[in-house]
Length: 102
Image (tube, rainbow, N blue to C red; front, side, top):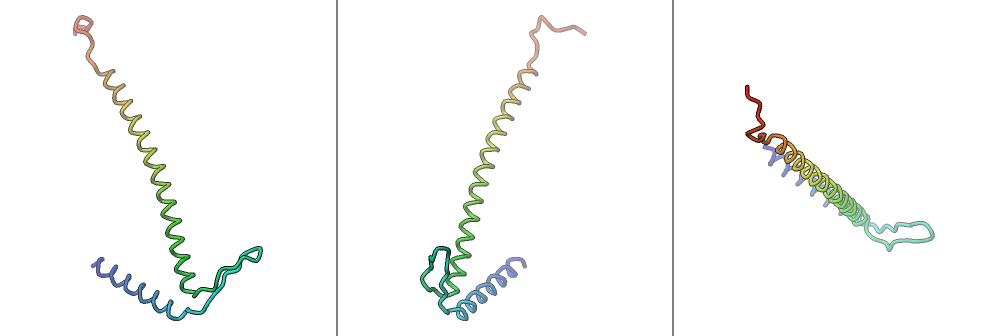
């Protein structure tokens, strides 16, 4: 059922994007500081490029975050291995002649 709802949602989103593109074909020029200006382009392209730029920036942020988390996991795994080795050395039985008889 969730797969059907997802497909319907994506189809509606696609239709919305197509109709938005068809309704907003007028040229728009973006003006920046110091007299900088983009060449005129249709509004829907400007919106599409903005969305794609946002997706790319979010992806880069995700990759940087993932890299940081992987580094942290590797450090924690090394620490766990060192603590396990230390615990193993403390659990080794004493020499047979040194045992206290009970």
